[in-house]
Image 1 (cartoon, helix red, strand yellow):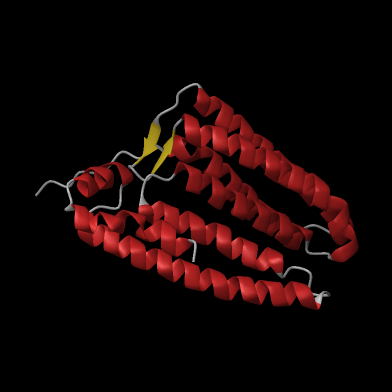
Image 2 (image 1 turned 180 degrees about the vertical axis):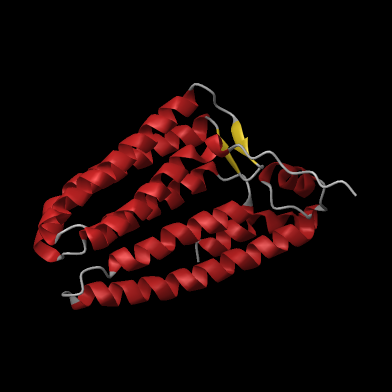
Length: 217
């Protein structure tokens, strides 16, 4: 029996990899850097975002790269990534002075911000329900913590708890709809799924709306 090792094109998800590495680096620096040097961690996060922007611009010269039919670096994904990265960069710049007044855990904040950005980048590049769910959870888990980041504000903790409960229900509904789609089409990849849905009896084509509807509940 011959085992075929798939060829993985990691360049298709290069911006996401850069942001993940930058987030891990920030968490390491947060526990090793002296407290009076922690304001500089915001600039480290900004450098990571700029590196991801450069990778996105580089991928623009060779659009269409695909990572195992799970994510693709096409024109739409790259355009959305540029908007997301610019917004993340502005978020880092706007939050630097605010964090100096509120908390000393600046590395954690910027790491979570980069992980949330990674989830958004992966979501716009997703071509499979599996990567949509993974990117959604990466984004959501980071946002849950960021929502309750200000421990001195009771409303922040309350908002984080409410967001977590709502997000948990929404994720379960999304998984239920995705399971129905997989049962009907035998695939989680969007392109063959669209073909399979077109071949379903008209009475069962309502299944194609399940993940979208239940994710918005």
